[in-house]
Length: 403
Image (tube, rainbow, N blue to C red; front, side, top):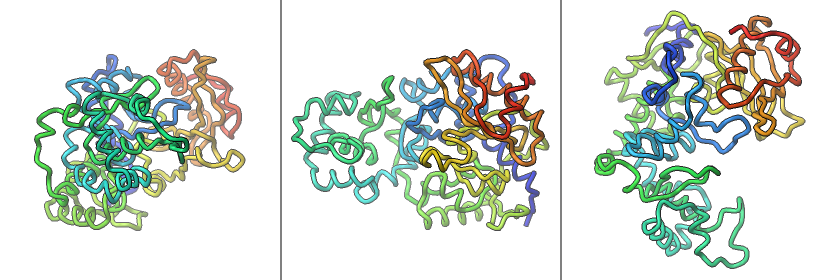
């Protein structure tokens, strides 16, 4: 069995995830964005907007400042090549993968979230009515449908999702409807899936579950380069048995190659087409929702970076900050920085900046300063505020950009 050093595994993982390529010499275009999604397989969506919406950041990390409207058009205009669905979490996924995700859609009555699932069980007539409304009026937001429904007092509960919203979410999980785009307030515009997706995708036969699992595990393996079984499974949140069979079948087919990675306890699998670069240059900030660091145990094994997102941690208990992005230099993480886009003031706030233990302080501070200035420019902010706390803050505040 082949053995990889940790450095080899780290560089394979970065290259597979779309890092280290030649930077665009002109403003990034649609083809550059497509290459990013081909590398990652999907882009996670999250509602937190303290810095920038989560699905926009992975492309920035890989190709630099780009027009976010490119991504908006990819999922809202014809020819649409991305669509929304529950993949890892809520995600933008290539439309070509929709047939491979129908196995999940078929489990809606047993696996959809509690509220939507209960509405389908207890009020099927409402679900039918909502589907008819979408068919007649779509694209339409939940609020627009809710406005037509007389609701008794107490109809709203929990997260303030009305029964109509729950019905929409059930139909979304089931695959009957999907998002045709989003409003400026980030609300979905629902429409029939048959009207949103390209006709050739709608007409593609549904693969058997085992074939769908193989497709998704291979997408994950390509995106990860080298990974353990649990990480291949987690990428699309696959069932344990289905993912395990898929891994075994892909090993038998020669698509996945079992390898040993020095210092790893779990068995690792290398995709046969994974690139293996000799060195990495460049520097960028990585979103908490970037596929590179989704699986925290793998992140720690690969990069010696113990990373936790602290959004949901009470402020007094936070170690590094609310919305912290690790800073990648070459093939190592050298710092992490808590950031906030203060759009009203027009500046990038830096609540905290921290140096990683093995990093060189001054070169890291200069490189990070350059990256913060680049990020602020992409966000349309006029400058970068002083770092408020953290062991790297004094040096970061005192250096000039290394760019």
